[in-house]
Image (cartoon, rainbow, N blue to C red):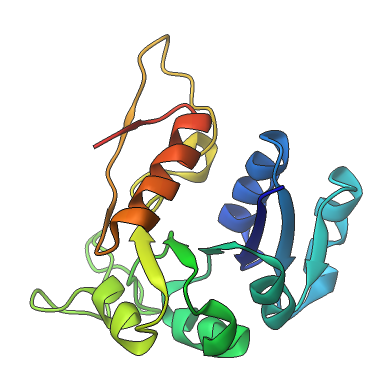
Length: 177
């Protein structure tokens, strides 16, 4: 059975973890604070909770679902050796901790920088595929738009990893662009 390790314990991580369980995957959520996931684990008794390291060892596929400002820390805690050769679905965005200005969020990258490329360069033996970062958590798994199948845009530099993510997205009722 396919095993997914999810790095993060916020709403995106929990929604995706529940979605993977619903679609027959084994799941472990990695967190720095297991107490944050007590309710999730009660609602999802087949799901597992551990550290970032535990989740990265557990998963054949990894989902990076943390706040962008701590993404590199989460990957460091997961361990580069544990990520080697694995597909990492990157659901992060480079949103800074600064408050919005006139309703516009600030990024910690610039127009000449791609956050996913930065992560890929930091972990060259892993295969990053950007997905889920362009939609709210309520629509990540089996979205219902009145019979219209929505498109999910993905990117990455490894064809095998992108095929793996496309298969997952198809199960989650997305059309892939």
